[in-house]
Amino acid sequence: MNKFMKTACVAAGMLFALGGLSACGEEQTPPEDQFREIATVSDLGDYERVNLYGRTMYSESMGGELIACSAAGFEVRIRGTGLKASAKATLREGAACQFSVFIDGEKDSNAHVVTVPSNSFGYSAVTLAEGLSEGEHTIKVLKRTDSLYNTAYFEKLTAEGVFLQAPERTKRTIEVFGDSITCGLGVLRKYRDEKGELKDSGDYRGETQNVFQSYAGVAAADLDMDLRVYGRSGISLYFTRQGEKNAVLRNPAAVAVDLDPAVYPYDYNSFRPDAVVVYLGTNDYIKRSESGFTTDGMKAETTRFLRDVIGTYYGKDIPIALCSGMMMKSLTGLDDVMRDVQRSLASEFPNLIHVEFEDTIMGDGAHPVLEESAVAGHLLAEKLGALL
Image (cartoon, rainbow, N blue to C red; front, side, top):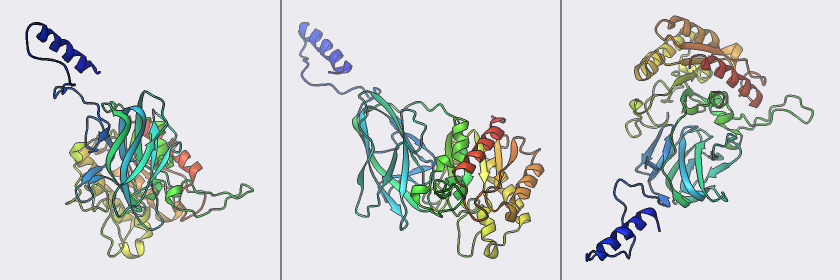
């Protein structure tokens, strides 16, 4: 019998003793302003019980919360021993839609990894946590893969116990506009042979991707900040191939960069991060034979992005890091581009810095691996942390 029921019984007994007609036989309905502990959350937009992270949106057509971008997801607090979801994913062939599950403040993004299956016939039951000790637990579920290969939908959550009020959000947030380097594509692949010599396996799969071990994830962890990402593998800032319509600057206000903003709009007024990182341009350069990329053009479009998107929505005083250098460093000219943009906008954006990373140890065209992503992340945290 809960506290409300006990109080109701006492009151009923007093009325009965005074000759009233009330009696206590059934549990009473709590007042509307009293929090109800329930076992199933049928809408992840239930802000009393669920914290949403990143750009998410309820999809009417799919009947669930759409989670596409890396590092997006949700957090709940339960009293019980486990948590399950009714979820499904849309996948490119051979891809995997994976989430890191952080239980009770866990820091290791590889401690609990779950895969959301593709199911064209409906939603599947996915175990997010099980076998927990009796009592209260905080469970955060964040996407470690990116939207190029997969999108997840969550219909409902079920606790082996009851949902409590969502935990208070206390951390600051860093928002990163980036591509595959930011999303950690291939960061977990093998890149040394049995003798310890460099040998790239070229193993780029969902299972070798982890945004939380990219330079962005490492920096966010160093700064004890939540991470938001907009972008995905293969995305440009502006310059695209013929027939390719999406780029971050061309579509900045959607829930994910490949979604139609008329159907899946994002409201910049709904959230303001504490710092911004922009690391784009490698794909603009890669697509140069069709895209019309030039270093002068890249300077102009980067400047336009900072003014029209970051400055307009977040203000020009927000700490911003323009990054370059980890991939094709000697070829792209992006170090000079970003350095020149920072210098030209220094008076307009007083907290704008340029962070130049070292080139990948695997050579031109190869994505950063674990050790260099960590070095870059620590450097970014040091430079950006000085502005926070």
